[in-house]
Length: 202
Image (tube, rainbow, N blue to C red; front, side, top):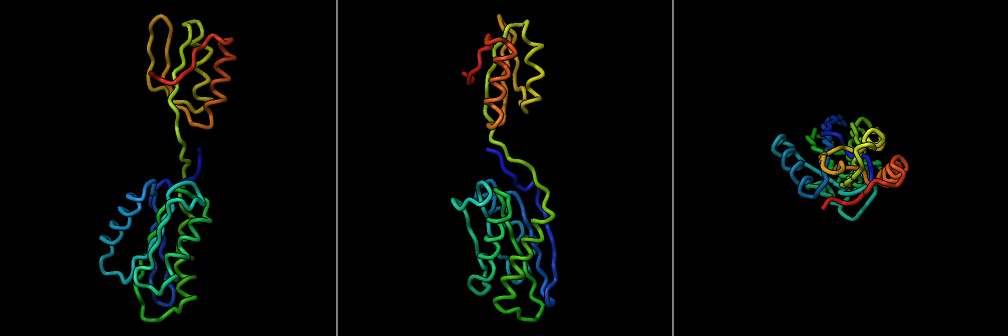
């Protein structure tokens, strides 16, 4: 499986009616990672009025592992709109923490929903992304004469060589993106006229 995730932590600050909203969006491949990011933001801004948060662990839009908190704001005005934006943001394995410094003007429930959701939207709009790819380990055993035929196939299928063993034949241990395995096996088979042995390490 391949899907976009945050490439790094990213931050956007907005001021709305004198309240300052600092949105931090970061990678969260596990719930523990999301909680770690939240603790880090709390430590960084210990004097803030609120630290509201939401996370989605898994592919974009998946609801299997999600969480949210209003952190003292009126119920449903912070965590829920933040989570909604994350679920529709096209990014997986992501946590958002919006830190608020109260500026003295009440925003009302509608204003809070707009402020918290909008802060996450602004952060996602400029978020650096990368693809998360579940990798599969394969071994490919070929005759020495076939080395030149198969080696160019690794880069073409995004395979990374982890090990090479030169014995009676040559065995390459490869790490391959899950969605490229079928194409690579087919290409190796064609290039060696069916003489290559492809399997799992063991």
